[in-house]
Length: 397
Image (cartoon, rainbow, N blue to C red):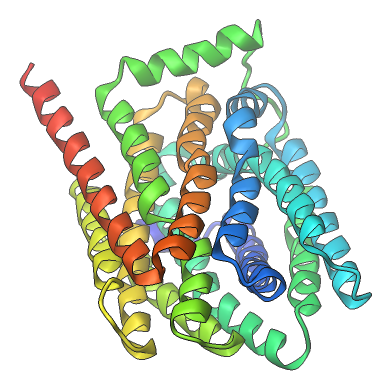
């Protein structure tokens, strides 16, 4: 089994374990940040603005981050971004412990954390390919999806308990400390020490990546689809806490439970990916259809347990969509363009965050959580159908 064979490689195994610890802390922090904003403001729109600001740097800096990931040693770049995110999380923990937090400071934190994350993502994905090798990358992405979604399952549940009994600062503190294993690993691993060998004009290199996407129909279709679906159907950082508090009237533990149910569905999808040989682009269609269905079901007057089950479907759909699109991109792209094309993919995915998150929050405050969820599902369905139609017409030509 390709995914499990990778764990016999000691370098990749240590990387995978370090990444899991970091992802666990990240999911705890994300759950705490969303709940903190709802507690401070009581507004889904203001929560949407926080999430939008966290994704906003992707609109400006994703392409330069991809060029940088192809020009400098990826291990060096990762060490800088990991230290930056750890420092920001620890600073937020300090503000919470000192009772000096405010909505404005949360906005600043979200913007700076998102900026560090933009430079981290293309470097980390390119580093993963370098560490695992191109041939073993589908197994690596399946393993990473597994650890990511175990963290998605456990992180919000643990954060809910911590928030209910000890306070929100602990979630940020634990996330800050969770970067330590990865920093130790990056200090000793003999991979990622050299740049990808790309030289010359950075702007020309950036345009070279854009040109590759434009002239490769399958890759272009994935970029358009992931932006559309990201805008209307993957805004759970805004939708779930607002729905849990403003529609269902739940507390921190109930919110954590719903997020964990979503993580359970995502984990099931990740396990399925890890156990499956080969790759089929049809999985992307399955994933998007589940995301659309979940949003349409949230329009119904469901209780907390039923909503948790629906979020399990959403988690499964999200993993099939994100893992499927990522795998398709990574296996299609030439090595020398990898960082730049990944950055365009990240621009499409993360760049959908600002409009999508703010729109979701505004719709919840304006129409109510159920109507907003149903409308988002319809919009996601229309975009998906449009991309499928364009792809069929293009293939016939």
